[in-house]
Image (cartoon, rainbow, N blue to C red; front, side, top):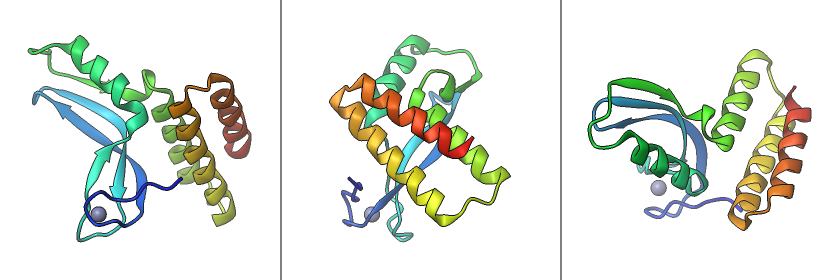
Length: 132
Ligand SMILES: [Zn+2]
């Protein structure tokens, strides 16, 4: 279920980035896929959050007020990633836990693409158990 880069074919990782909208709004913690090939470094917004990001931008309109928005308040997947990142900073997680977390995040995206709410909920629970 790993995503490969559309430019160079390498594996892509997931990270959180700030996205600036119309030079005025800083949307924090948007999940993006980033190519692991440093020379390529291609990045794109994670498919599963595109709709939420689009509707947020629609709500903001063409002349938004200068502001910062925390995307994790709107987006479940962003919230999960923020939770994972905070946890990993606080505690030195073992690589086996880290791998499990990554697998669960991949599964979450799969469940999301299938629109399977029940499964998404289960994965969220398992992830929370793992890192809290
Ligand atoms: Zn690439």
